[in-house]
Image (cartoon, rainbow, N blue to C red; front, side, top):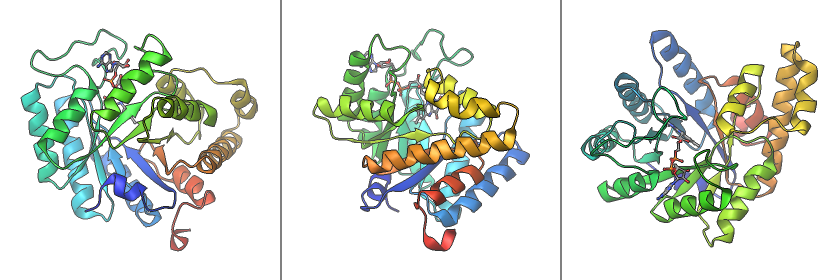
Length: 295
Ligand SMILES: Cc1cc2nc3c(=O)[nH]c(=O)nc-3n(C[C@H](O)[C@H](O)[C@H](O)COP(=O)(O)OP(=O)(O)OC[C@H]3O[C@@H](n4cnc5c(N)ncnc54)[C@H](O)[C@@H]3O)c2cc1C
């Protein structure tokens, strides 16, 4: 099985998709429909997020393992530090290896319940994602990714400090970083410039959410930590009460964003899918990121 970085080095731009682990049978059916619909589009990798509770964690391991064993797709498992001792983290990493998963996105995670609440490390755990990168590296031949924040992480004092710690995390052994959501291509490109200005050339991948509904817009505001810029609001506001018009305008916006990022040389666009495939298929089809036989 290849690794994420190998899939990024093909010379042609690619896309990847992110799912969350299903909570019940109905969600499982929806997720697997999306996976099967995306499979012929040949995403570079498929990532599965890691939740705060025990059962959601088991589902991440199970789902990522199924992707490894039952599909042609390359899986990447997310892993967080929340409520885990180092021994437990070693155990989960061992499980990933056992089910054939060699790509890990090492993130810290947020305090369960209140993501903005005080971060308290497990007494025998780790405090920063940087330490998890080192642990993954120590335990085997994993391809390791990390998270980056175009507007700076909300807990960072300023953009300079944020970039400094991001670069430290990348230098701790990360192969690539995936950026949190943002609204304009320049927001991501400025992050890339800040990292490059510190002499770090690790690959940064932009994260995109297809803006198909006001709910996806609200989620982008929440995750990015930014308000909607006027230039985006002007495109979407006229369709507040027109779902079809909103979807079309949002897909157009994301396609234009993708075009600009690809023109700026990004090797991959990472889509947050909410376990649905239609909008992502439409955008990557319009961007020419898929095999001819798939469209
Ligand atoms: C692509 C992507 C995928 C994600 N997947 C998940 C998921 O599956 N599950 C989940 O729960 N969450 C996920 N998250 C959210 C993530 O867990 C949160 O954003 C979290 O608040 C920060 O994680 P991090 O890995 O960036 O933390 P860190 O890199 O540890 O940074 C946290 C804060 O500490 C600062 N910092 C870092 N290192 C140091 C240091 N050595 N000394 C002092 N300060 C330092 C940073 O600047 C930042 O302010 C994801 C985010 C992204 C962008």
